[in-house]
Image (tube, rainbow, N blue to C red; front, top):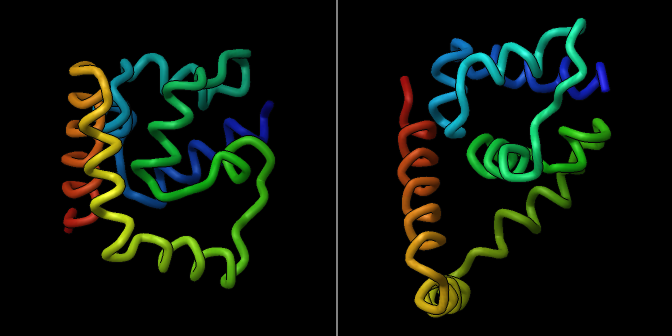
Length: 119
């Protein structure tokens, strides 16, 4: 559990984010982030927060939970998988989602954009 806490703190610090900024990006309170990073606390992020962290910061759940990193080949395959044929399929899939899920995807997309264009 302490390794998860260290990886979350490392990720936040590598992105030069305060606890408040990190919390805002993944839609949790700064107190949650503080608890997750604190060695004296036993709390860790729930599934929804873990998925948000993995998606927004482009890390795998395997890395967050177990410390496993993608190999360069895995990363290359992952990056090349979003081609011109995939995009229409994603749009089709989004149309089948509930309004709440569509809003969540829109919010995550905006946050990803802001994070990737952060100076």
